Every structure is written in C-alpha cells, then in structure tokens.
Length: 245
Image (cartoon, rainbow, N blue to C red):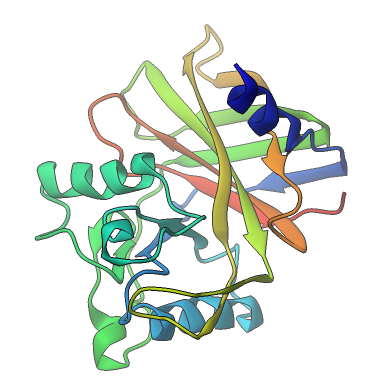
C-alpha cells in the first residue's frame, strides 16, 4: 500500500485564475505529436513542436498536445513522460484508419496522419467544417464547459481535459539518446475524460474538476480541452491556452 500513497502525495491540485477559453464555430483542430525520449529520431520533432510557442496562430488555428508513448521503453530508457494510454491512443488511430502505422515521431492533425514535417512543410491550410462553439470557464480547480453544436448529430460526447507541461528538461542516461538533455513543451502530463449528454436546450454542458498533476515535472502549464464521440476519438472541437496558477 506504500507505493500508491507515495504516488498520490506527488499530485497537486490546480488553482487557476479565472479565464475563459472559447472557439469559433469553425473546428479548431488538435495537433498531436507522438514521441518518446527513447527514440533517436524524435528530438527534431520535439524541437519543432516547442517552436510552436512562437506562432501567432497558436491556440486559434490549432491546439497542440504531445503524447509520449511507452513502446520504446524496452530499448534502454524508460521515458518518465510516457504512458500506455498514450500508446493506445495512437494504436486506436491505426485501428480506426486515421494513420497507416504506429511510429515515432508521429503527427496527427485534425484527426489524420500528417507527414509534411519530414519534408519541411508548414502545417496545411485546411477547409474545416463548422461544428459549433466550445467554451470553457476555468476558475480555481473547476472547469465549466459548454458546447453549442452545429451539424453534429451525436447526443453523447466525451470531454477530454489535458494539463500540458512546458519547459520540461530531462537528461537521458541510457538508450538511443544517451548523454543528451532533451527539452519538451505542450506535453500531456495529466488528463481526465468525462461523458456528457445533450440537454433539452440542444447544448452539451458539464462541470469538471481539473486533473491533478505532478508540479515537479514542468516549469509552466497549459490546458487543452477537446470533444470526441463514442465511436471515434477524432477531436470534434478544441480549445487551449497557457494557465496562470
């Protein structure tokens, strides 16, 4: 019983200043990076992802989330940011036909595999559908979420809240990146999911506690919130931003 107690003691409740995050009616896509500290091909993609902090279109044209996967842990370095859930998310994209194979670095943009990074291309300018407005009011450790759908037939949606870590630095002492110090941003370091149903007012409304996280991991934190259906994990709408705590 000692180990679960120690793990729980490391988690911190978030207390954020009041902030509102709101999308337009047009879909804001999730930009997903699947990466690993155990993969020698990943540091260039991690650096590219970190540079998104300088993009004036950040949070408006897309919401970035880096998912560290655990399937390279066996080759010498156990990535402390990785989880089996992240690996399974990437595998589910493969099963659902959104990507051709499971690999790192792997990038999913608006629910589809994107390989333009390997050719030095900018993110594509997509004609995105009008799906409805997603609004999140954050205060203290609470999130009040409202989605007003447009052209969405689902009566039940999953709401995902991810805490993102910025300024993460890890010195690698084994594996393919042995001896390197790797830096990361937009890393999912905590996550919650909850289901909500459409109300009589044709809106989806939900109150959630923000997920707890290990405050020792990241210098700064942000948040990403997105919606998906029960049949597909492809995000329908997303909002995100940095947090003041």
